[in-house]
Image 1: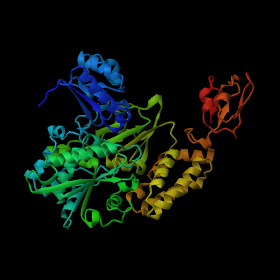
Image 2: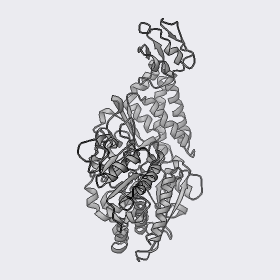
Image 3: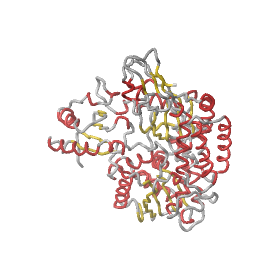
Image 4: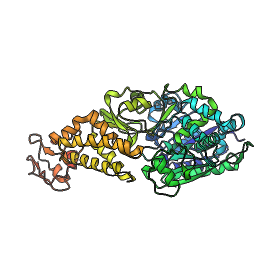
Amino acid sequence: MDFYRSHVLICGGTGCTSSKSDKIEEKMKEKIQEAGLDKEIMVVRTGCFGLCEAGPIIVVYPEGAFYSHIKLEDVDTIVEEHLLKGRIVKDLLYKGAQEEDIIKSVNEVNFYKKQTRVALKNCGVIDPEDINEYIAVDGYMALGKVLTEMKPLEVIDVIKDSGLRGRGGGGFPTGLKWGFCASAKGDQKYVICNADEGDPGAFMDRSILEGDPHAVLEAMAIAGYAIGADQGFIYVRAEYPIAVERLEIAIEQAKEKGLLGENIFSSGFNFDIEIRLGAGAFVCGEETALIASIEGERGMSRNKPPYPANKGLWGKPTLINNVETYANIPSIINNGAKWFRSIGTEKSPGTKVFALGGKINNTGLVEIPMGTTLREVIYDIGGGIPNGKKFKAVQTGGPSGGCIPAEYLDTPIDYDSLTALGSMMGSGGMIVMDEDNCMVDIARFFLDFTVEESCGKCTPCRIGTKRMLELLEKITSGNGELEDIDKLEKLSDSIKASALCGLGQTAPNPVISTLQYFRHEYEAHVLDKKCPAGNCKDLLAYSIIEDACKGCTLCARACPVDAIEGETKKPHSIDQEKCIKCGACMEKCPFNAIKLG
C-alpha cells in the first residue's frame, strides 16, 4: 500500500466540471509530477462537495485547506506555495475561511456546520471511480452483513424500524413498501432505482450517483435480497453523462469483485444491475410511467391499483425507490435502526438532501436533519439573501410543491409540517425568492413547466393545467378579471381531485399556495393593473421625473427602440407605445430621474 503525505481532493461533480475542474485536475497532476512530488502527493477526483457557489473547489489534506473559485492559473501557486513549501495560500481560501489559524477541516466553514451527512457522506470524500476507496470506508459491509447474518424478513424489519420514508417525494414508509413487495406472489421480481430527476433546479440524485455510485448499487442488492429479486434496473436521465459513466464503471468494478453477479459472498444469492437511459420526460419520475418507459412504451402513468409492488415491470412484483432513499440503506444496516431514528424527528427520522438555489448566497447541495427550520437552512447554511434584499418566500417540492412565506421561516422541515403549509417535501428542490420575485409569475412559471411536461393521458392534467396557465398569462399581462382568480381556485380543486397520477394531482400546488399567502398580488395585477414586484413586463411603465432630468441624453442613446425624446439640457419624455420596457434607460441614467411604476 502506498502512503502519501498529502491528498489533493478536486471536485469532479457536474457543476465544477463545467467550470473546468477536469482541466484543473490534469494540470495539478502535471505540476506535481514536474515538482517530483508524485510519490508524496495523491490527487483525487471526488464527487460534489456541496458548496456549488464556491466551485471549482480543491481541499488539501491533512491541513483541510478549503480553496474556492479556483482557476487554471491558480494551480501553479498551490503547488509551489502549499505543496512544495508548506504555506497555505490564504488568498485562494474560501472567503469564510480566511482566518489567521490554519483551517483544519472543511467543517469549519459555516455552510457545513449544521449539516449531517448520511446520504452524502462519501461525496467529496472518495474517488467515485475507485471501488477500493468505497470499500475502505465500509463499503459493501452492509451487503456482506445481510447475506451472511440476516434473513430477508430481518432486513425488512430493520428498514421498517428505522422509519425511513421515501425521499423521492411521496414520503411513503420504505420498509412497508419492501414488505409489500416481499410478500407479493411472483416467479420473478425486480428492483428499480428511480434516478429520473426532473424538478427544475434539483440535482440531489445526480450528485449522489456522481459522488458515491457504489452506495446505490449496494443498497439495490440488499433490497433484492430482502424481497427475493435477482435483477435490478437504474433508470437515469441521459442528460446526466457523468453519472451514467460512473455508474457503468461502478457496475463493472462490482462484478469484477464478485459483489454483483452470481453467488455473492458465497451466499447463493444472485443479483445483477442494468442501466436504462431516459429521454428527460418529467412524467417518467412517476413510478408507473417509468415502468412503461423501461418496457419500451411511451412514458405515461397507469391506473393504481394494482401497485408496482404487486404488478410492476412486465407485470411482475417490482420495488421502486429513488436514489437518495437507497443511499441511506447501507448506513442503516451498518449502524442500526435506533441510530437512524436518533437523527431527525419522531415522524420524519433521518436527514434530507436539498438543492438550495434561487436568491441565496450559498447555492448548493445541503443535507440536514429533519426538523431543522427553514430559517436555519436559508440564513445559517445558505448565508441569507444577496444584495441586502428582503426574503419573500421559499418554494419546496418543485413544480408539485408550494411557496412558503416569511412568517413561516421558523417551521421545522419535515413531511407533515410542509404539507400543513400547503407545500411538500418533494424530491428536495428548495428555491429561495426575494422581494423582486412576483408570486403570480412564479406560479405561471411552474404551470408552464407542468403543461409542457404533461404526458397528456388524462383530461384534468392535459386540459386543466393548460386552462390554468392561460388564466395566469391573462393576469400577468394586465388583462385579468376578478373572476379569473375564482376560476383558478375551482380548476385547482378539480385537478387535484381527478388527475390520474400524483404529478397531475399536485400540479396546482404552486397556484394554491400563492393564492393562499399572496392573494393581494393577484388582486393588484387584476384591479390596479400593477405588478407589486415590478416583474411582469406588460404591467410596467418607465417614466422620467421632469425635475430630476438634466437632459444629458444618456437614456435616449441607450434606448434600443428610440422611445425617448427631448433636447439636450432639457427634460426628456418616454413614448409608452414604443417602449419595450427593457430598463436600459434606468440603468444608464446617472441622476435617478427615471422611475418604474
